[in-house]
Image (cartoon, rainbow, N blue to C red; front, side, top):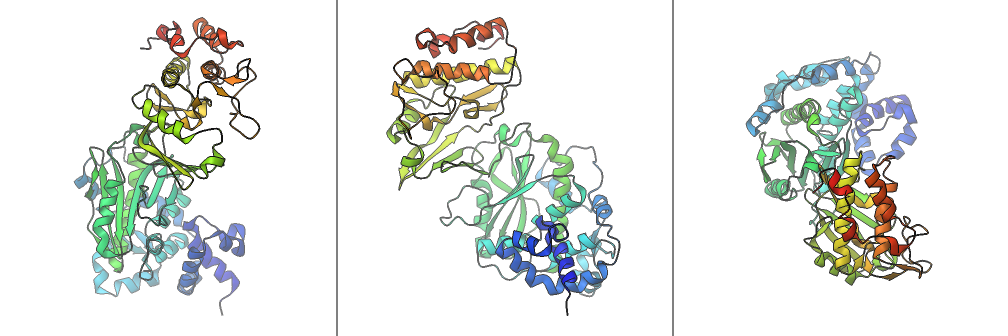
Length: 522
């Protein structure tokens, strides 16, 4: 008879890599926090886990010390620079061998087919947590007949290893994301993403059938796009990744100079083979070391999380890809009131070469009530940190606003959340999904009205005009957290935010203000 305490102990061993601790929240609550598929996987493994955690639970757990020894100290050397160097790095021995429960180790040693990997493992009866994680990694799951099932099968080999090493050492805070449910097969998001400091640093592609390994490899490249954006990847020279299909798994690298052509950095593993599973775990720990010591210092200061999906409360989703973002608005007519689709199509076309604006790399569409547009370049919403950066940002926004006005449109929602930094000293105005033909009558209740409007935004007739846009640009200068501007900056701010709309300069006139030339701006 298995006791509740033994089930809880087994759960702790199995769930820690999943980011859940039974000892902290209680077994029933912890189980309820897992997905249905994860619970099924845990219950299927429960008898075997309990069999070996009984003796381990009585000993002192030295997993923390062993994990640190496996990872080793920061070598203080640059990371591997080429694919062959990366391959040798992944194959090199860890600072300490992978720990196994003694019973598992003896069983492994008793099978001659496993002798080729015995130099990678050791028997250790004092690493309760790590041995449990290793046990789950070495336990082959059922045959995978779908991408979701394959993702679950691969999780103990990769996801759980990263989670457990981070839980024990705290050296590499990260988050994981999955995209295995897209029914069309046309998604441009990676199937598996690992982000460190909000930067995509490791990804994977999966296919249910082993015969589709080539497809998985191709998707490692096709989902990268043609642009290696510094704002997305900083100074990273490459992106480690893996392709999995059926029982096959292989590690690759996508190089900065040829992002569409993944290069193999390991042999092809058969995860149905115990020795191969050990090698995959060994490679994964070395990847943790690579990211921790070699690649993390190269990440961008203000990144964009490629592969992530941002959701807004108005039915809007923004999917961040390697070279673009895809913006969708469900129920466009009700969620984007006061904005006409034809105006959006026209304005993106009319401003396709304009400075200071985001551009549509795929024209907007409206199908079955869902609006969709692909936009570039990538950017983030970090605010200027000094007057020089503010000068560059305001100049760029005014250029974008001037382009909109020349096309006969107003933006209507100019605020820092809609201003993107796209690189050192470069900024653009985004979110054109609020535009209208100028002048625009202020919407009645339930129509368009931006939260950034003030009592001076509309003119004396209650109309939103080009002068209204200019006033909102001035408001950017008020709300940027830079409290002291020079005399010319204060003068421009006062002109842009003048109470009377007729007293404000046009965007074109404002661009000729001396403030933009005092700091050497072009």
